[in-house]
Image 1 (cartoon, rainbow, N blue to C red):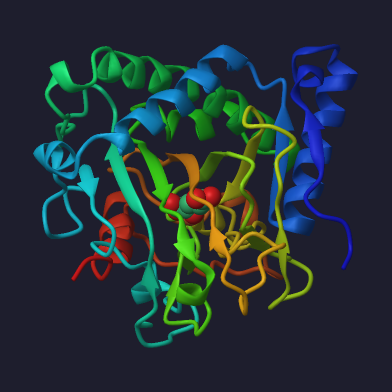
Image 2 (image 1 turned 180 degrees about the vertical axis):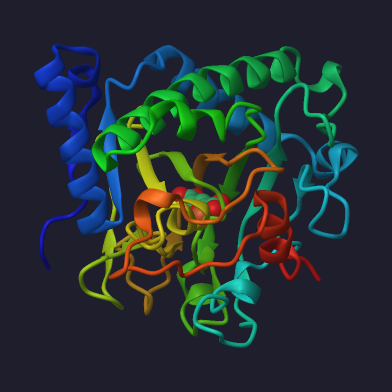
Length: 330
Ligand SMILES: O=C(O)CCC(=O)C(=O)O
Ligand SMILES: [Fe+2]
């Protein structure tokens, strides 16, 4: 089966110049091989991540009617607010890159999508403060913390790729990101058996990088970059690990030097689909780092050579995002 995702200690990025260089090189190698990497000591305090999970659990434990006070509009845009189980089905876009028709597999998940606290275009949608005191301000501060880590990771990637750190960071200067809480309710294994229902269908994320936190339930799988069609289980050593994966926008900017990581969530590996088993609920949190909406996703000059001609047309990050999400709901 080969090794699962590598684990990297990011404290070396903040260490000596040699340690920093070594971290950047390992990051690039691991991502190219496995499509994702686990990062520890990334700078976000453990207590903040534990609190993030605690808040996430509290949010999804609210009565349905309360969550619906923050309801996501019926269409994909603006991508803000609470989506109930069945509202968004990722299989509709699973085969996008491969030119396949929309799939019909249903996702068993509920989500809360948020963006920057002061986004120029779209406001966040919150449940009234009295139902979840402190929730909004906590999520807004976590967003800022995650953005700082995003910038460090972008620097590390730029160093490893030999491109300008300033330029890559400037493409992300507005923090026009998305931040999503996910809850997969407990489900009889039999429901997930025939393939018509899953937790989240396979897909690539649309942005530059995704930083994911998951609980210990299991079920996340990422496609190996060197063996297409082979999905490997990715288990975190704890909720504080960041699972980092590459999205479509970085694939475009690097002219396919990086390929976006295809991933999905199924039953935990130990589930026996034939039994009476109940698959336990699962919580995860994804921070989707995206280029500024108005920036171009045309591959960067460094990646265009005679041997590797430009593979992508000029499109803005916002146009790309909207093209990808158009089929998500409905
Ligand atoms: O729940 C997870 O671990 C993955 C979620 C995900 O891939 C997404 O929301 O794009
Ligand atoms: Fe994803």
